[in-house]
Image 1: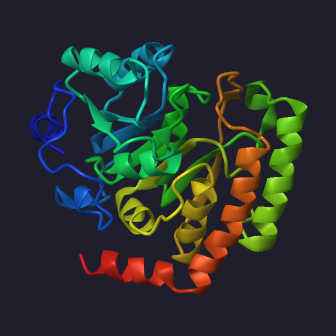
Image 2 (image 1 turned 30 degrees about the horizontal axis):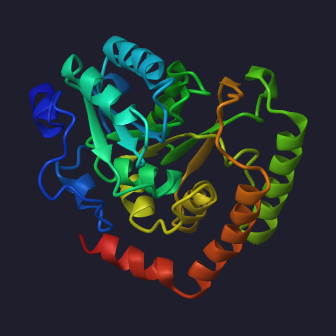
Image 3 (image 1 turned 60 degrees about the vertical axis):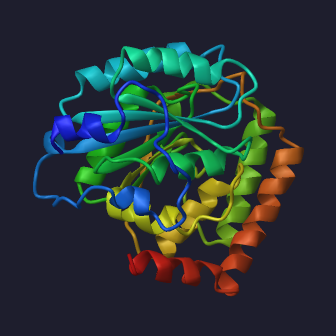
Length: 292
């Protein structure tokens, strides 16, 4: 992608949305620029990094320092998108101020607090890169680990998902035991209800080839914590190649997941995903995306 076009397309430095910039379920935001072929090497591609953020004022600046440093060192063109999920603190103001000095950074505002799944979808559907990655704002997986996911996509994967359990020795700070037990129970339910045979679906570090993102995110229905299994279910259902990639990871004490409340909701959403498939809701979305 031409760098000058990239900066124009992402409204360099102003941190504002263009008029009428809303979440578009039809995926037109992903089609604002023409598709490019995949015959070029990794260095010639452009990338988007999406960071969903809710009340992250205490750590968003440190995270952006790392992400923008990584972007500056990368051979390709990288845009960074922060999606503010109705924060009540200074998260949005900090990002706007930071964007003044960093033209490749922009801010997208959600219409209130809608959840992490909504935030990721909002950012991904308005990204411009050839490869699109979303990461937790706390960078539990160091942003340098993105190289592994980008390389997996370049090697042929449609979706590359970071995994904490393929090589668990890469976990610098592991989760508390109770979180690990809940995670194993949830993983077992995923295998039984959705047929997802991955070691780790919940690591907030995933990359998508543009065509895969167009297909998956235009069908996504789950807007809160249970959206990760839905993305992988949709990708598998479409016959996309999914690569599970071991990444470094460190547990953050600032996580906002309530193990009981959010855990129960996530289990319920597994059955919601299954019902959406049975009732044809995903088929309808797929028909819309294929008609674009």
